Length: 223
Image (cartoon, rainbow, N blue to C red; front, top):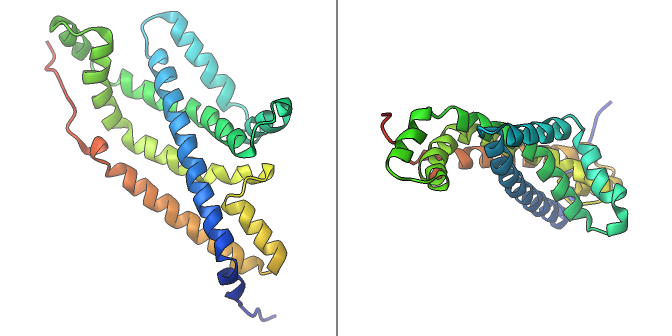
């Protein structure tokens, strides 16, 4: 059986594809911002010396990442339907909370990898806990975990396709709509596959080359 390729419908629906791509980028960026904020807070608690913050962080991480992402999205969209939240916002919440659990473990590991002598030397210089974290610990830790965070964002971009189940108009949703209209299944999904490949690859490399990721961290010699 011979298949006659026809890429004309892809060009005719380029506006939908462009809109889906922009929505995917916006959804992923918002999800990443939420995940990083959650990751820093929970990861810092997980690396704390006190037992209560560590237990709270552990409870969050284990309870969130052991539940499928799809259920997180459904929880906000269907479980809390009385709130009448926009589908886009429900997807952002689901992605942020789910990916935040993984970001927390990445941050926690990075913080624990910094020698304790750095904190002790900072305290000897008169720096408080917050200034020690902001000026000494975080710069070193985030430089070390930058590749892991870039990998997490790449996964988050791919996970954003699950937002199509609640009718968020990202790439996967637009692909389904175009395929239903044109019946050009191969052409549509081949195009979307290439777009995801280019987007994820470009973002992964861009994050690794950010000045913040390449900067020389502040380091205080161990006492």
